[in-house]
Length: 145
Image 1 (cartoon, rainbow, N blue to C red):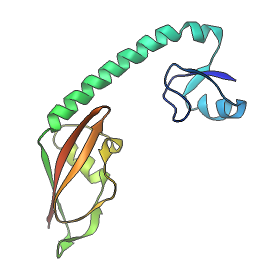
Image 2 (cartoon, rainbow, N blue to C red; image 1 turned 90 degrees about the vertical axis):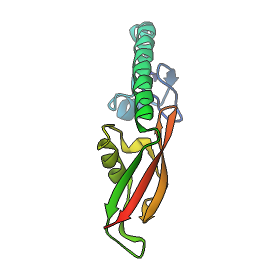
Image 3 (cartoon, rainbow, N blue to C red; image 1 turned 60 degrees about the horizontal axis):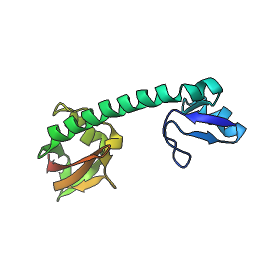
């Protein structure tokens, strides 16, 4: 079965690629999830228009990513949590960081936050935020309550 990808699909292809997939994969996953459409002659003809739409969406996203990076450059967030002897009772995870960044007026998703493991100690930490090709390091200061 040939499909036209309307989103990037890991290990399969990028937006706009026409790829051959097994019928079950196409019918049960790619098409219902909106990741692809059937590669009909009309869809292939419309590929050029679709690619223009993708390019416009990417330029709008790239502009939004640049604005988010500029808004967060050289910024710190401070979180106050329960702790004893420098160790947190819980941890600071992506959700808390996202909510604190929203307090700065920048909306991000948890996918933008590159945090290998939750923060479990009081102190200053650096967290990388990735916005497409744009990256910024955010200072996270964790204080004990």
